[in-house]
Length: 241
Image (cartoon, rainbow, N blue to C red; front, side, top):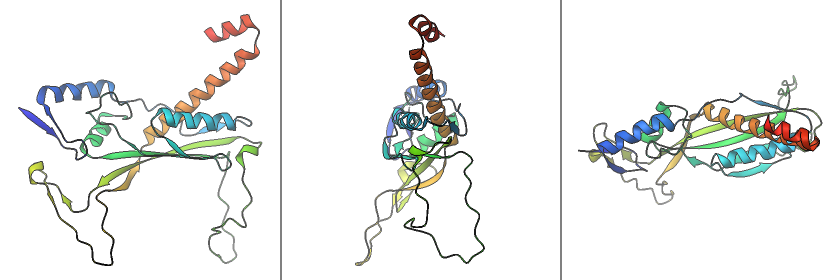
């Protein structure tokens, strides 16, 4: 007896016993912990190290950084396809339900890191009539976080996007009854893409894991810096601790 795993991007026929073993293995080892803070406070003078640690944490998680704006404190990554039960070595899911969702549907994640001055609050709207947004930032003060003397706060947003195919109609009973409608554009219209991505929700557990990785990296660098300033005997003792 065979069972079909319903995922349009991972259409695979697996024997029943193999599928059961993958599900059990995925429940045991395929879920990652969600430990980590909601945001990080970066002490004054540690911005450069925190920025590098955030870039490294994203890369280790498989999210390739494509935007690295040190002056404005922004890091954005390329999307990465979410792991499924068919990939038991992936540990990017926080629960069995999340792993099941990423197996049934085709989803991906992208991350955005933002550094802001600690205690930052948006300005209150003025009583004068509004003149529209300052699209070219001509009236905004220049911001360069690399020269800021005060503490900063780091937050991460991880967005989950789901793939959709125009004209695809799936049966709720069997994949054999899935149909696709051919959408013919008018002469003056562009053809619809075969697949497009739509944001569906945020993955807050993944956000905390990324912040936890940055926190651990900063703590490790601080211990290394402390041990390098100590005499040889004290440095060895600090490393053992």
